[in-house]
Image (cartoon, rainbow over all chains, first blue to last red; front, side):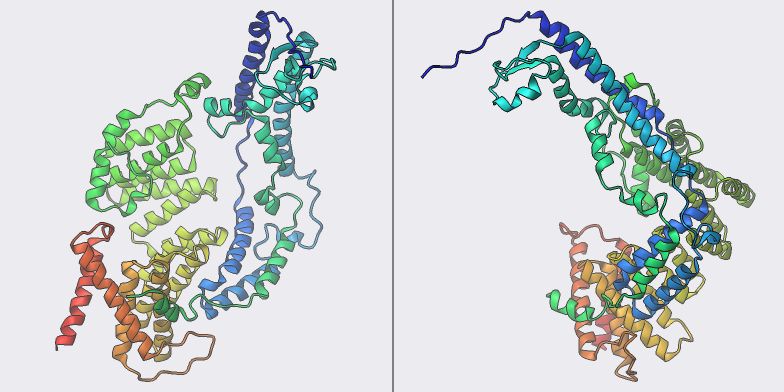
Length: 261
Length: 326
C-alpha cells in the first residue's frame, strides 16, 4: 500500500514575520479599538419621566401580586386584587390616559424608539466597517498563497475553511492561507480580549451577535409598539382568574411534622 | 488587613462599625486615589472592580457614624471623581455627609431645601427622594415623611425598601392596619423573606394587643400572627425572632384559654386548637433554649445572634420557668 507522500512546501520563513504576525496584531488592535469606540459611542440610558416609570412599575407590581399571591391572607389579597383590577381597567396608571383605545403609534415615528435603533445601527457599523476594511486589506496583499502548516492532521472537509483563496485541489488541508488565518483570529481572540479588557468588553463580534439574537425580555415588555393599555387589561384578567390559596394554610401542621425537637 | 465589607454597614454593632472605620485610612492608602480614564492605564492596571465603589460607599457610612468626617470626605471625593457630580447615588451620599455635619435644625433645613431643589429638576431621582424622606423623619416630621413615601410608592410600587420604611413610620404612629398593609407589600416582593414574615407576625401581635381592640379583631390578628411566625421558622429553622414570637403568641393564646373560640368564616384564618398551640409552644421553647444555651457557650455555628435578642429570649424562658414554679 502506497504511503501518501508528505507534502512539503518550501516557504520563506519571513512569511511568519511579515504576514502571520501583522494580521494577528492588527486583529487584536482593532478589537481594542472597537471596544473603546463602542464605549465612547454608547449613549447614556435615557431618563424616564415619572409617568413612564409609574406605568411600568405598576404593571410589575400587578405581576408580583399575581406571582406571590400565596404569601397574603385571603382578605388582603382580595383587597389588593380589587384595587388593582379597578385601577388597571380604568387606566389609572397609564402614561397618557387620553390615548386609550387608539392604535399604538408607529415605532418609526417615536423618537425614543428611533434612538434605540440608532444605537443598534452604530454597534452594527462598529462591527461591519473594520471587518470589511481588514478583509479587503488581507485580500489585496496576502491572497493566493499558503502561509503556514498546522501541526496536526485534518480531514478534507476543512479544506474550504482553511484554504480560502487557494484553489488547489490536492493540497493537504493542513496548509493554511492568510484569509483563513484571519477568520480563525475573528473567532479565536475572545479570550485575549477578555484578558486585556475585562470580561464585559465590546471587542468581540461573536458576543455581540449572541446578544442580538438572544431574547430581550425586558425591552420587549415595555418596548416601543406595545400598547400598555392592552397589557394592563391582560394583567387585570390574569389577576381576576387567580384561585387564591395561602401558604399559611396548615403551616402549623407542616411545621410540627417537619421539625423534630 | 481584611478588606472593608461589601454589604450594607447599617446594621453593624457600634464596635464593628468602629473597627471598620478604623480601617479607612489603610484602605484609602492601599487603593490608588486617581481614576484615569485613559485606555493605556486601564490596559496596564486591569479592569476596575465594581466592589471597590461599594466599599467606598460603606466606608462613608461607617466613618460618618464614628465621626471620622475626614475619611468620609476623602471617600466621597473619589466617588465624585469617578462618577461625576450629578450621579444620583453620589448626590445622595453627599447629602448624607452634609446631614451628618449639619449643626442644628437650621442647617438641616438648608439640606432639605437642596433636596427639594434637586427633586424639582428631576422627580425620578429615587436616592435623593429617599434621603429627603429619611431627613424628614429624623427631623420629627413623621406625617410629611409618610406622605412623601406614599408619593414615592405611587410611581414606584416595586420598592421593598420604601415599603418597609413606610411600615415602620406607620407603626411609630400607631397605625397598625396601615403598617401591616405596607409590610405585606414587602412580602409580595420578597415572598420567602423569613425576617419579614416574622416582622409581620410581630406587627399582628402588636395590633392584637393594642388597647381597645375588639375581640373578633384580636382573634383574627392573633391567628395570623401564629401562622406568620410558624411560616418564618419554617423558612429558617434557627431564626430567633421567629421562635420568640411563636412562643410569645402561643403562650398568650394558651393563657387566654379556650374562651370564645368564635367560628370564623373560611375567608379568615382560624385559631389553631389547644393541642396544636401547646405543641407549638413546646417546639419554640425547646429551640429557644437550645439557641440560648449554645450562644451562651458561643459554640461553633451558633454565633452571630444579637446579644440583646439572646438576652430577651433568656428572659422570656426564665419568665416561663418562674410561672411553672409558682
